[in-house]
Amino acid sequence: MATEVRLRDGSLAVTWALLPQDRDELARGYDALGDESKFERFLTGVPHLTAAMLHRLVDEVDGDHHVALVIFVVEGGQGTPAGVGHLIRYPDDPAAADVAVTVAEAFRGRGVATALLARLVAERPAGVERLVTTVVATNHASLAMLRRLGPTTVTDRDDRLDVVVELKGLDPQT
Image (cartoon, rainbow, N blue to C red; front, side, top):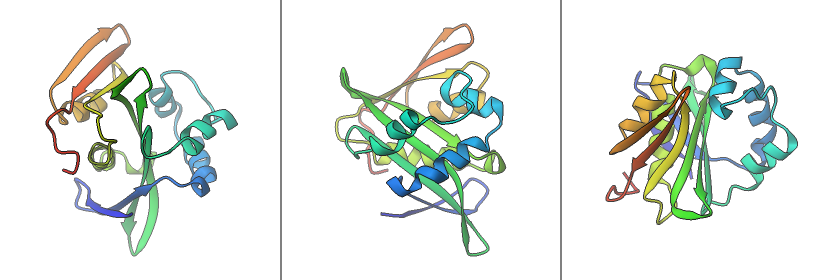
């Protein structure tokens, strides 16, 4: 189901579930990212998404353990792919999930990641009460975005930050 959202800059955007037919667009979008953005996404240098990575990012989306959304910014009546987000439940702790949002270079700074993250949290699987993720220590925008979601604990590990965001008590449909 498509959901309309307004970005911080006032632009209209639409989110919906990542579909298997989005595989090639996801790979092309990732290839178009700069090296720094690629590093921030996987915390290591990954020049291209491999077949195994695409399988995990697309084929393993089930809406229960793995939620993935795409966002398109609507300009001039056309939708342009602007980002993708994943929320993946930890198998050993079903109340916790990792979260990752990737935004196309041309759409950074407009509120795409914030809108996408809000939709992921709203559509999180039942029982997910906290986000547990790691971000590059210099990625201040990601840290600020996560802190806006709820009470946050940050543990500094040199060049990376382990982040826990408590969602318990937040209505998943807000």
